[in-house]
Length: 369
Ligand SMILES: Cc1cc2nc3c(=O)[nH]c(=O)nc-3n(C[C@H](O)[C@H](O)[C@H](O)COP(=O)(O)O)c2cc1C
Image 1 (cartoon, rainbow, N blue to C red):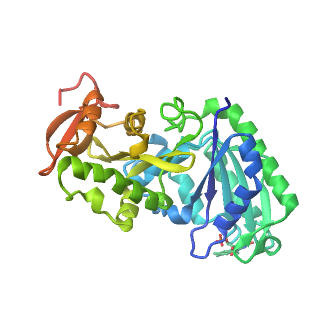
Image 2 (image 1 turned 180 degrees about the vertical axis):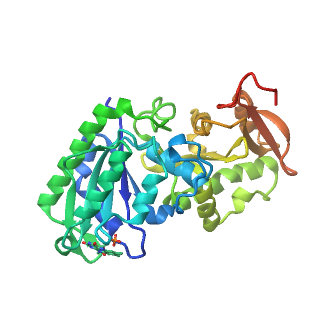
């Protein structure tokens, strides 16, 4: 069985009423058959929705020592991609600042990944923007293809829809196939750790399972799954006083911006999720959920392992999570995964901790902690 090839479809404009997502949507429509034939998953990212602040990491991205949840989430999303399609407008003869910022946030995650540009604009059809972006992506060691596409909006835009015509559709399909060919060849070179959608979650269960970083568009489904799962927690612990049961859509959207979160889908349906973030030297894992009809197949354990593996490479001493005092199934999973109770977490919950043998980056001969 051929392996899924993951392509980040990055829409680079951020202003209200932007046409960028419609250009990305045209690319997705035009390449649907090619993507299906070559087992390519397109992961659309709208930089307007992603809302990265201007680069605010204290360490240089080449060190990979990220502090902020938005950087960790962005890193995981780019690291999971085999190739990148950048859909970019031209602003004043160059690329949008938001694209430069999104590129600057990371380093090894981009390296040796092929990049295809879809430029668009007025008379120059995005060519000068792409020229500038190529210079930057080359510095990031990305691999250019020779198949970039340039759309003149006057010829391609019909209201809110972008449809440049059959010839462009064919060129888009050819360009994606070329991206796949190059990406497959250079895949062994990529540097960043991959929270891959394949092993360990997908491989035992086949291609229909897909693990991906969560974004704002997943918030509504996460809210529904979370409420469904925390009803069981309410019954097990005889209480309705559970934050996860009472959160609103706005609450979920807000924490999605602060946590690295992953969604597990089966044939498109959201069936599981987990979130994590760094607090001091601890990697906090939470909101581990699996839909009731999907339990008993090892998915919760696989999601837990995935969240553990996504911990920053340095400076983490403990993995920490919390569950209901009487949530026996959860407690069984966590204990058998090496976690030990470290005390109460409020009146109805217990905190569990797993020590990382030697914090990565620490001197193993140093004083005991
Ligand atoms: C700040 C700004 C600068 C622009 N500069 C250019 C330009 O240099 N060349 C061009 O072809 N179009 C230019 N345009 C027109 C854009 O191509 C057009 O507005 C397009 O819809 C922008 O993409 P977006 O809607 O995704 O933001 C500019 C638009 C904006 C907002």
